[in-house]
Image 1 (tube, rainbow over the protein chains, first blue to last red):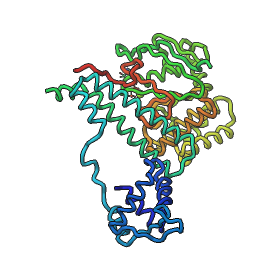
Image 2: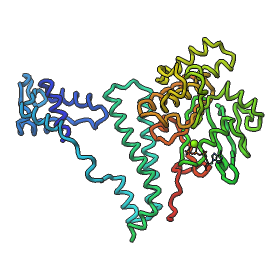
Image 3: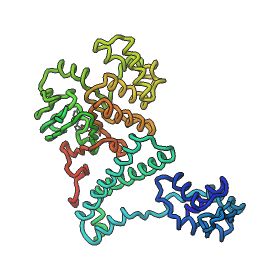
Image 4: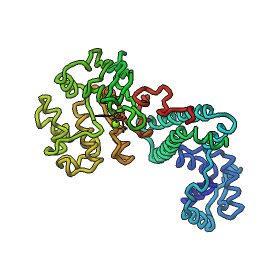
Length: 178
Length: 231
Ligand SMILES: Nc1ncnc2c1ncn2[C@@H]1O[C@H](COP(=O)(O)OP(=O)(O)OP(=O)(O)O)[C@@H](O)[C@H]1O
Ligand SMILES: [Mg+2]
């Protein structure tokens, strides 16, 4: 979903081939899961069907990877709308971390939940260290840096929650079991 | 490589309140260790004992193999001036001196010329992003500026061991990042060993390891909370 708007955003700067889009996507969002070529073409196909992009020429070699795409006026309008929309601030709380604690208490006991929380805490901590090392030892691009910042801030938030959850495990167990 | 600073079985009690109950620590050159744990768990007390500000009730602290905990205060303050850099949680600057003079003071006390000391002070204030505070007296600085001036004072002598109690507590995240990057750099480039007390996981992530305290003891689980005991 978001990927299609990123592609529209890239096309807003001029027509591009599918393979160029994939590389531009990975370059601009360096810490995102890389976009698969297949996903680029299926997304472009959908955007074309909805009239948000249009084909803009083809190299002699042909094939989808040699087809250039351009954003349409509708595409620009859709992009503008998306940029102006505020994302609902966490309307639902659904996180695997949270679900695991609840399920651990349903099927096992506080010790199980605690074991999970502490293992998760260690995994988060070592990931934070890894990202922090990257940040302090290498000259990252600004694009990379703000992506790393994003990851670190969210890991930090998770860690705070994990810590608080550890304090509440016994109480939660009583509630879940009652 | 043998550790530069070691602590063995440190205990400290304030009146009847035990603050440290048998702490061991080995600190190596160039290493950053984060000390964490809930408020009141003994972090500051540990830092005071390690840096020789406070004598532990029992146990020992060694710097380069020599006992420092049972030595006389003049020796320990000499050590703090020449080998250690200490940023206290409620660190005081001298209120009549400007920031630059405060930072330069440890160098001048060590026999350095005023000129060289003031130049070094300006360098460290700039590195910590508070060059603009150089000519101000502490009473005119913000909390975050004060914190960085005090840190500059702890770092200006290029200590062998740097003790920092919540060095980023009053800082926004970008200023905190600047401070932690600088600490990482001196650890890497000058081999400074750093003990940093912090509540902040993003700060602790600059350290190679964490020492988590709980009720004055090292918590082997690293969690800092009592667990698995339904209340
Ligand atoms: N000078 C003192 N006199 C009496 N008790 C003290 C003194 N300093 C600390 N304590 C007590 O010793 C314990 C450990 O205090 P310490 O300052 O080392 O905790 P801390 O981990 O640094 O806490 P914080 O995160 O709040 O700074 C606490 O129970 C505290 O009340
Ligand atoms: Mg403290």
